[in-house]
Length: 90
Image (cartoon, rainbow, N blue to C red; front, side, top):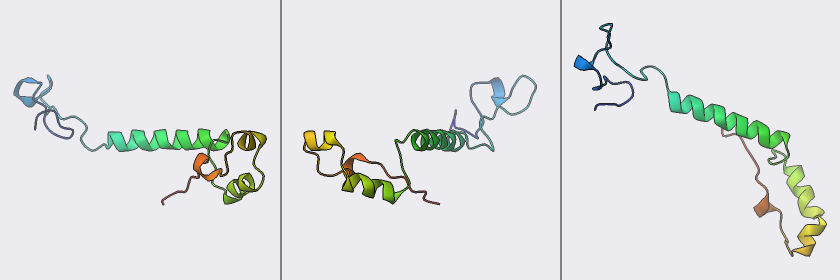
């Protein structure tokens, strides 16, 4: 199919660059996978460093045992639905 990654592109005359080599885009490189993995690592690092995410079950348990005043004020009985716990799937 024209324009697919790792395939010859139809955008160039005879499917070749001006130097004569085949007009192929993205061959041998998993661009989306590489970029998404980097974005995930940045998101995870930021979340962990800023207390937005936790890998510690003790942290969630502590939040359950000693809810802050705003939880009482707004009648929130569980922190589980408001806390994102991150586990690696590897």
